[in-house]
Image 1 (cartoon, rainbow, N blue to C red):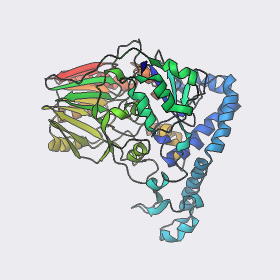
Image 2: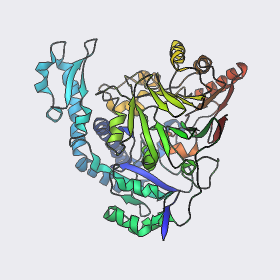
Image 3: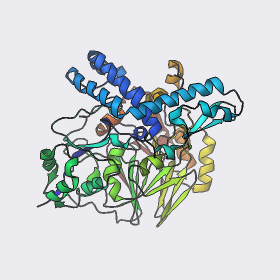
Image 4: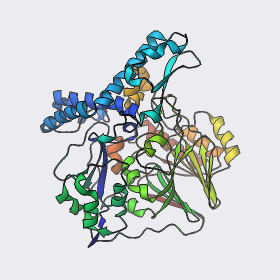
Length: 528
């Protein structure tokens, strides 16, 4: 009997039992997050589980480093601490060496040639770093990231995949603060993310095969063979053909995910997609994607835009993945190209500002992306203008229009657009929320709270819409869809600065004769 993988099988890619996101793949960021995020949070929970429970009840503490588990899970968390110290020992060694290197450079590098300092590089990093000054003569270092991926510090052995059935939204703890504790209902696959057996499994959402075949293929990597059968069904899914109408169709799948189709070509932006189960609000799901996606374009390296949970399930369907190039060797800006390459994606296109990718009947323009990264030097970010069948969409995610001259200069080279999709979370997370473990010197609370990630304010977004001459402008990427609660833990209401700015932007667009709306859950546009 041939079977299909159920459309509501939840896939949790895990790194040492923590939800795997982009900064848990590269060796340097995985090392710092293991030591300064995971171990610190777990140790705090073991010592004071009641404090974590109390903090989680306080809305002001949402998104903090508080583990969303009950006190009865203390023994399991204590066991995970021991496993982390044992199986993640190389990562802890790397984190210490990087910290020691930073301190050594601050103490010793005073403008003299760096060559005398190479013998003082901590032994684990010797052969993996280049010592440098910036143009202000501040000492720093460049990591040879490609080489680290080929060393013991790439902790691929900590990667697993947990499968379970989900039937509703908002059932998962916040991914950055809570490890996934194994239970009897989960089916855990002891597979690395690059393993092609994952592609064979996820193909079965649309291509049936005998259950015995997939069970034999997965073999002894399955933690719960009895539970595996329950993840499959004999019911075939409904077909989801490509758009074959005139012009361009744009479907909003939630957050920053847009499916743009026209002339037989499909482009998907920043995919984070809901599973298919009866739920409100109505939404497009993975089942609504065509069988083949020509291009996936990723805007920047934050965990709500590079979503391994979705990407691993779509890998066999994707023609090419477009990723922005990073500032090579900087710890805060690891390479998206390398992270995806080493997790099994071999169809990557790395782009710079104003690169163009030709499409049948159009092209993808790669646009400069300002802001969102707390004024850190991070280059792995790009906006996109997608032209198909004579129509054009501008998808810029969380980019901020900080310099109004930029939009005019870019429009001069890439032309106008029909629709603008822009993020307007104007009071995002402080710098320490994502990058805290990477700072060699802790930020003061005042600076940390002031250097927040943000999209455009109303006047900045309106200036952008007018610069490109759009007829429609839509705010998105605000993390409000209920199936995203474990990714952003973000609740915005009418009193928040972000939603007030959205309201102001929509009113300004109405005055300017531009159709505008704040997107939520599901929307479709057809540009004939």
